[in-house]
Length: 224
Ligand SMILES: [Zn+2]
Image 1: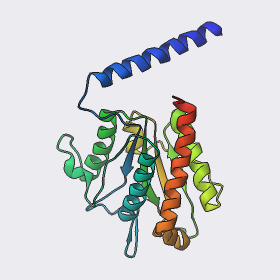
Image 2 (image 1 turned 90 degrees about the vertical axis):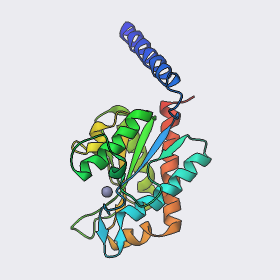
Image 3 (image 1 turned 45 degrees about the vertical axis):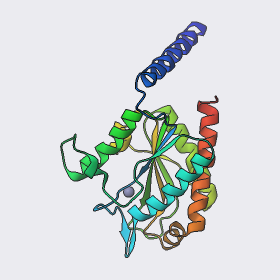
Image 4 (image 1 turned 120 degrees about the vertical axis):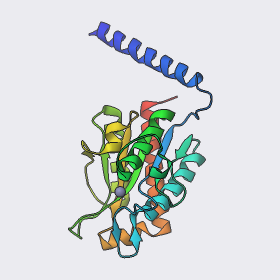
């Protein structure tokens, strides 16, 4: 038992060393703790309700989250700061516009190798009474931990008791190598959520709830 623990620790140390070496060898790449992946953009509005578009809400909440995390000392990268489609940047992969968009998001994360990626989205349901946040995780322990902490923090803000779910089919979760989660910030199809998601005060509270969960995550996973 003890010996297998030693082997595991040695393996983890070797992984850390080779990671550091890879980064040291690539001085043009930024070191990032977090990539904020801002869902949709440009021709791709995401979910919508009347004049309300998911891509716009994702952007304003992501920008607030980005600023707050930077203020707390994290090295943060945001992959969209205006209204445009990330597929336009993708001249390297084949497939539909939608697939190119998603490949661009995972490709950036896999190149920069941050410690985590948050993919920011707004949910939609045919049942207009469905509301509240939902965090979707990869099938790996750090993603599960991160999703649990984010869900708990967002539940507290919304007064909900939702549980995070495993996302087997999502391109971004399947193809991103670092721990990644999709954060569905509320439902555009629910009247109360829609109002909150467009409210600047609530957007700031969402950013704070996300930052608090990230603080907890880093305290547990990367204590130094
Ligand atoms: Zn979306």
